Length: 407
Image (tube, rainbow, N blue to C red):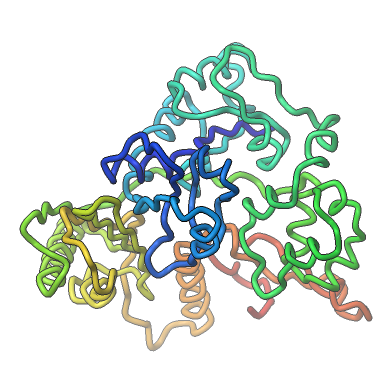
């Protein structure tokens, strides 16, 4: 069972607040992120009535509704507001998975007893989020997020027995929102052209046929549509270091790199004082015109070198058309194990395992630990390629000693 806390309008509210328009009077939508896809974000009710949908190309949206007001996105504001909600959920004992701002999932089983049953836990959860989010309960993330309801004392969960009645009528767009775009397969576009418009139609397809046409991504989508998802990955306790600079007099021109370089030297010094090395960096900038910018960087190895930080963040935002009010540089994930000199006379296989393990940890920071998989041979002599090996989650940060499998 999974409990979901979700605020579908978080991005729109954060963007409107940053723009000084907390209540837009006409059709409004969140503008695309700089350097990203030309797709608009959340839209308000008036934009929906005009035919605008989240994820639509910005040019198409403006053709449909020329009066559409595009609000600059504020990812930093979203992250700050949602972190308060996640922290409140952790305050009632929940281990929360929060990979996206506006969405949080946790398993109620370990803490049901201390809150007097599921109803008591639901009441405590509603008190924790304080009407800042909707709640849903289901056997999977997809089921829970599509069973959202406003704050109330009694919340009806989606049971395993009623899962198909709940999921089958949902449009394929709901699955696309969860998984994102299909890399190189055009899964959702192809299914739409074939007339497969609901999860019920999709989940009844043969798994072998889906794998043959759409590969691994198609099988992952099919498993999610059938209610089979990987375990929750709760966020870890934070051990980060950050630097915040108010830059009211610093514009977006040549002086911005100077401010970034100063922040890099400060955070390098603080990491050194704490005996820590950064696994990743994030840069947030609040714009004078409203909204904010956000970028993440992952060095090849953990480091606390100010020069390396400066090289990583030098072109973080590119040319800006608005001055920056404040700049925040964070090292969210840190470690005490920094770069080490190789032992020239040690066991080469031990050195190789250590380096592979560290590389796996860095990849996990960059793309998410749930994407790291281990190749395990099952039937190497089979005529069917998909039966020769299977992919299982890579636990422990890297390859195990003596497992005998090359990666």
